[in-house]
Image 1 (cartoon, rainbow over the protein chains, first blue to last red):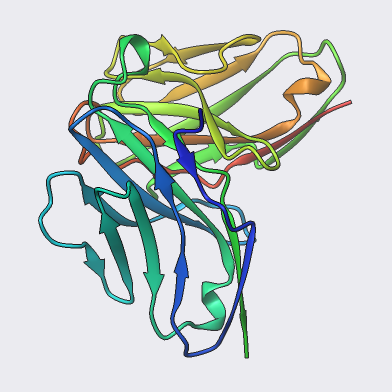
Image 2: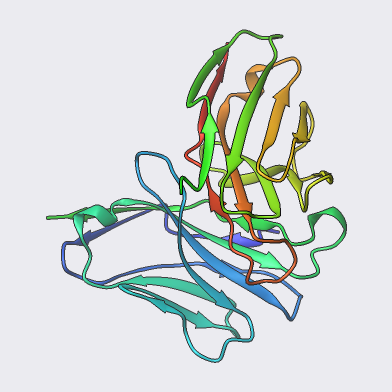
Length: 119
Length: 115
């Protein structure tokens, strides 16, 4: 079973509008962390935001916020006031504390969502 | 402060050739990682080094070897390249593995083509 699922291969948004990128995850560990990364066309992976499973409040970093719904196992990224420079691939990733054996602490990535911001 | 650097940026190999991808970080991080990114598959962990002097296999280690040369440097070697190893390779580092808060920072990637 997929540990991280990003169901939107591509999303479009108008400049200055908000957009939500979906991410659902699957784990039986009570302790885990969720991350979002941005990959622009230049190829580098840029860390955006982190949410811990025990965090009571949704994480925010500037225009990025994470809509964390633990019971639904979803960790959607919300980008407010989209900018042309937000056009990129976005990856959701999870770190489990007890993934077992040699996979301890590793990040598992989803397949990504391509976001295109229109002027 | 360059973060994580990788060399080379691009490489074309013939089947059977060998090469080493270099990675260095200047953030004094203890843990380092090698990933590969294939179209439609996200990133997959090849090898990692939780701390200087240790290395372990990740999800897709076959065909690769690694060396943690010192705290700063972590290299990935392809002994006999195969077309299936055509991919983009990312090196990453983090302060230390373990806590769920540990954030990994990535290098710019190496685009490798094996003919």
